[in-house]
Image (cartoon, rainbow, N blue to C red; front, top):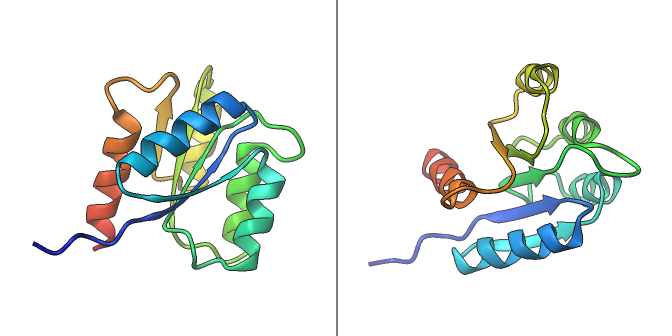
Length: 128
């Protein structure tokens, strides 16, 4: 059986413990992971090569550029991949705004039963 290609995932979160946990989990699931400690750093990385990442996982509340701005600016830079919002305490308005921005999934922190890795696996199936 041929090993499937790993997904290239960019994780943006200002909580370094969460970022480390995300990177470890996704790497152990076989994905290639890069991290950014705020939305601005993530957008800068995406803008350098908009087609590099398959998936962006972002928090909402971050310094310099929040998750909404990250989604908007990444799309403006030409990013066509999948976006997962992984955040806590989202309001109904936040969820509506993300829906309007066409994010692929919104997953609440903390991750329950590997929901994030499962969502990325589902998105990967859709990319094939």
